[in-house]
Length: 478
Ligand code: BYC
Ligand code: FE
Ligand code: FE
Image (tube, rainbow, N blue to C red; front, side, top):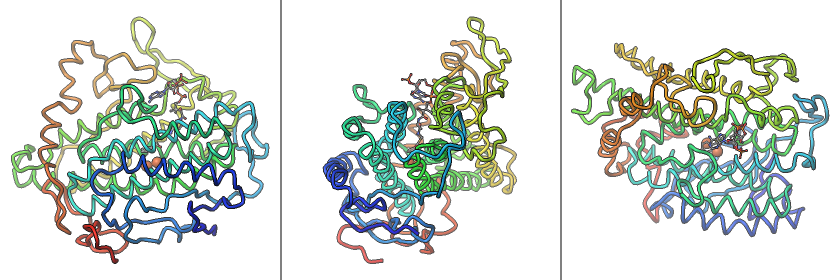
C-alpha cells in the first residue's frame, strides 16, 4: 500500500523531496482554487458534501467518506504503485524497459497527449457547473459533486506530469489548462464534446455514461504507455473513473425505470402527460452524446495514432489481450466512403493506422453492454420498445464520415433529407425545453426524488437513500 502524505498538496510522490517541483505546484494551487471558485459548481461551494477522498492508492484507501466543503477537498497527486521491471508492451520499442523520464524525441508528442487529456477534466466541470440548481435529489446532487471534484483531481494528475517533466513549457501548459473555457468562442476547450452545452440532467447522465466512458478507454490506452509516470497516473485515475460511469449508467437506468412505470400508468408511450421523459426523447439524447463521444477517438484512419503506437506512447486498451503487439503486418478491413461519390468501399487499412478504430471497437461493445441493461429494465416490465446505439456513421464531426449525413441506421442522406429529419434523430429545441421544464428547481428534501426518475436501490457507502448527502451551511457531522 502506498500512503498519501498529508502535506499542503497530498501526494505519494515524495513531493517534499523535490523543492523546485513543490514550489511550482504550490504556485499553481491558488490559481486552481480561483478557477474552481469561478468555474466549479455554482452556488454550493460552502455546503458540506458527503464525499469520498482517497487516503491511499490501494482498494481500502477509497473507504474514506466524510463531509467536506468542495473548495477544501484534498486534491492531490496520486500514482498507482510501480510495476517492478516493467517493460514496454507494444510498438517498435517492445520489450525495452519503460522510461522514467521523457525521451527527447517524444517530448512534444507526449506533451500534447497529456495536455489534451488534461484539458477535458476542467472542461467537464465547466459544462456541469449549473446542474446543482436542478438536481432530482440530494443523492444525485452529491454524485454530481463527487464527479466534479474527481475531475478536478484528474486535472491535478496531468498538471503534475506537465510540471514535473516538461519544464517551462509544462508550466505554461498548466496555466493554459486553467485559461481555456468550455464553449468559449475565443478560447475553447480542445476536443469537440467538451465544448457542448450540458444543461440538464438527462444530458449529464448521458455524458457520464458515454463521454466519461471515452475517458475510460483513453486512460486504458495511456496506462499502456512506455512513459511510466503517465501509466501510473492514468492507472490510478481509472479507479476514480468507474464511479463516473456508474452515475451515468444507473442514472439513465433509473430514468428508464420511471418512464416504464409511467407508460403502464398512461397505457401508452406518451408519458409527457404524466411529467415523465418519453423513450423517444431518451433515444435522441443517447444519439447525441454517443455520437459526440465517438468523435473523441479521432479519425478511423490516423497517422497520429500509428505513430503513438509505433513509438510506445499510447497502446490499445488491455494490450495483453492482443496476440500481436507489434501490429506491423495486420490489416483492419473498413468501409470507407469513396472521395466524390461517397459510396462505401471496403479497404484494408494497415493495423497501426486503425488504432483509433480498434480502441473505438472496445468502447462500442462496452456501451452496448450498458444499453442492454437498460433494455432489460424495459423487457422485464413487459415493454417491447428498445433503446439502440445509432450507427457509428451517424452525426460524426471527426473522421471519414464527417461532412456527410447518415440516418441512425447508417444509410446515407442528402443534406436536404438530413435537415428534414434532424429533429427526429437529435434533441429538438422543443425537446430540450421540455426536459428543462421538468427540472425547474432542485429537489433538496432528503430522500425525495423528482417525478421523472426512480430512486436508486441503495444510498452511498451504506447510508440510506434519504440521508442528507448535501447539508446547508454550518452543518456537517456524519
Ligand atoms: N475534437 O488523427 P486524428 C476524459 C483532432 S475523455 C476536436 O483523427 P488522433 C473525460 C486531433 O487532435 C478522454 N479535435 O486523431 C471524459 C488532430 O489535431 P491536429 C480524453 C479532434 O490524433 C469526461 C486532428 O483532429 N483523453 O478523460 O489520432 C469527463 C486529426 O487527428 C477530435 C484523450 O483524448 C475531436 N473530437 O486522436 C472528463 C487522450 N478528434 O494534430 C474527462 C489523449 C481528433 O491535426 N488524446 N481531433 O492539430 C489523444 O489520444 C488524441 O489526441 C485523440 C485524437 C484520441 C483525441
Ligand atoms: Fe476524468
Ligand atoms: Fe470522469
